[in-house]
Amino acid sequence: MSVVANIIEGSARPTAREYSRFLHVAIGSASEMSYLLTLVGRLSLAPIADSYTLAERYRHVTRALLNQIAALHRLNAGPN
Image (cartoon, rainbow, N blue to C red; front, side):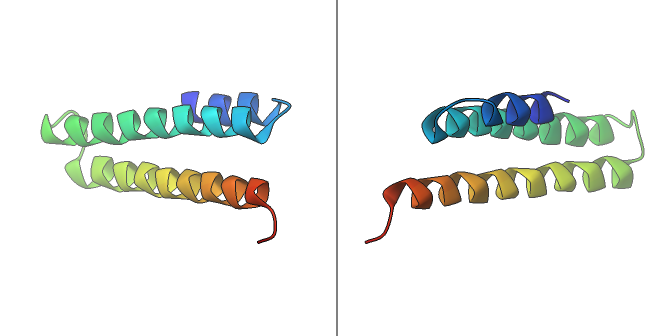
């Protein structure tokens, strides 16, 4: 939920730089969730296959956020 909340809050900011900052915070939240899900599986608190599948989905979210940040930077750089 923290990942989505940071994306939404950032999208309401007036500048791309501020939006990018919130996307970075969302990456931190997604990375934290990925770790916690992996830990849950390793501690046998949930089926390991399920926890690893969910952790991989959060890694995918992280890659998508990095792509969004890169696109924002390209947009702000303007035409060469």
